[in-house]
Image (cartoon, rainbow, N blue to C red; front, top):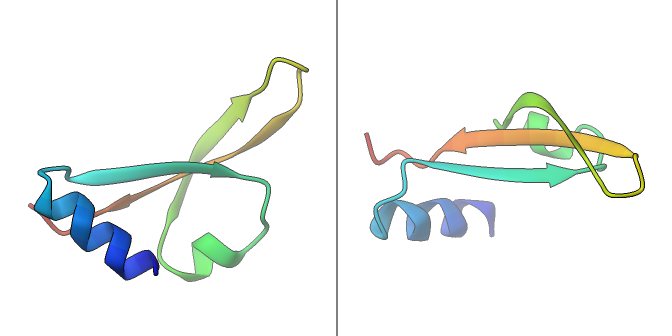
Length: 56
């Protein structure tokens, strides 16, 4: 499913995808890079990940 989303994003002209999650380890082990944290309205934070789609 992750590969399909990357291919679709590349097909539409996007060179990167970003996501935020509190899921530990899953995206990193699938090649996503942690690029920081994002904060919610309640003040809590979760990790921000990014991955190139392969468009470049």
